[in-house]
Length: 402
Image (cartoon, rainbow, N blue to C red; front, top):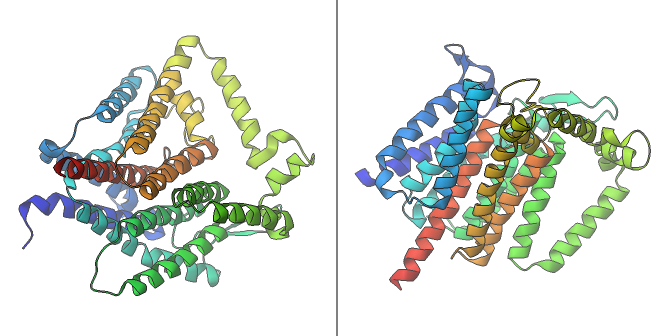
């Protein structure tokens, strides 16, 4: 018999498991009522989570981060009066809902453990299925014209979705492994499963050739090793990676648009698929706007002017869309989260896991269109941040009780 008080927790679990499945290619290409299943789930689940949050409001801890996120959301809504598109603005803000809903619905460490474990289980089919499709060469997304390198999307519609979902798996797996969970299965079998899934996830990530996510994984792994005080392993891995890139013609081909401009073969503005040149042009265009519009932004979804989702830089998109004020408020949210993690009562390794996730996401947001422009990634990220605050709150309560 399920207790009434645990119903919100199981709703969150159901959401998390469906979130993983609904991201697959089939649900991104099929739908009803003029919407894809992926879009329908994102919209309906967000409104459902708002209701859940309101129901569990009494258990929610109102703190400075809540106030800051609320101000940012209010400011973003106000931007509708000077250029933002209503549909795009709602789509931009809804991922915050999962943060509030999870913080209000989960009340124990065991619930956090179980949620993490269920998310990992939900990745089994996407990870194994994607690997099989790639090995059978049945999910070719594109072949890079300049190098002939094949990029695969696995069970997902796009290569970036495959890559980011594999990284999300590593985030959740790290949290779960640190927490531990007693199951009626020998621990060695769980570790074998994790190792097997991790190898396949790395393979999928490699074959997607999504370099921004490679960097995100390197940042996260570095923080993880520092947290465990594995400095020698970090040094050896860093040195080994450097020499692999230096000696591997395959990897050099994958990084051709970075290496060649640095070697003087082509313009430096073409580095990273033309990112540097594109960013320069966008900044110059933005600086030509009136000063008041630079502070306020041109509005989310203003297409050509705002560049949101097409800039290869979520933070620059945010600057252009919501101006200096909007970008400052958003970055302040990250600053608060980082300081809260540093000051938290959770153990050192867990601190560095969450710090690694935050800095990994910041890095990817700067280098591409990631956790701001991709709705599902935003939901995953704020779910993970909510888990940190739940764990920290539980640790503080335990210390007070002791």
